Length: 288
Ligand SMILES: [Zn+2]
Image 1 (cartoon, rainbow, N blue to C red):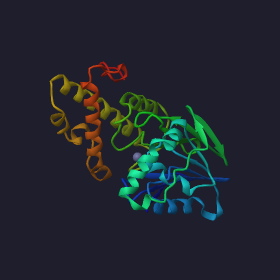
Image 2 (tube, rainbow, N blue to C red):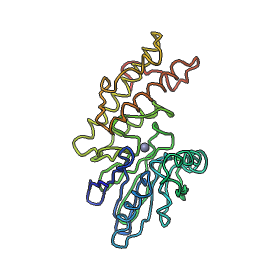
Image 3 (cartoon, rainbow, N blue to C red):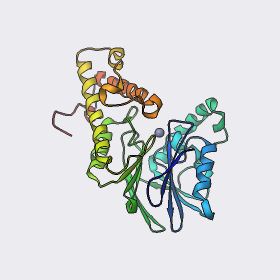
Image 4 (cartoon, rainbow, N blue to C red):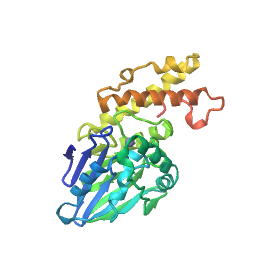
């Protein structure tokens, strides 16, 4: 499985089995901190072996959100305190059990997975200080409501989970929150961003990369709102390619087009409802 060193003490693994999902290992003076666990146990075992290199212990495992591709292999780190948002724990104790059963019907390698639940939960944000490393846990909602990012202060590196993806994805959650999350990230001094899937965003590219994602969100909302106002059908609206919005099908093996279509369908549904929740109205020109 490909692995990249992105800082003094930070290494990122990329799943070869599913959508280039990332997992991150941070070496400290007293064991290891791991962020997310990859979708499938065989790859996660490789991750765990690397994290335990030289007899190290995994002190903390952080889950960025409750989606299975990030948390399925939690159970392979039984020695670690497992840290997540309180809503991640609720999801793993509830709806994700059924999601796992469904996924295991398609992927037999998931049949042995047991969903391990977080042992430490956050309602909002928090900080882990361990082995000379400071990790700020930031609430980054939008892709999901439970999303957190792990900002490693000493490395100025943000492990963002799916709050930062090659193409923003908010279907099922909240585009407004995602916009606020990205605006917040733009205001921080970050050298490196580990996305939930795909390439690491390195020093010198971070501002531009966040700007591109903000622009995508603005454009796609404007596009769907005006198409709905003109009475377009979902099929007509969805026929747009991700390239027209600054995306690329080269990212994530073309999965970005699917994410784009899911975003459009979600917005279309929101904008064609009679009662629009105020949080989802199109922002006035010049705002945000
Ligand atoms: Zn994901």
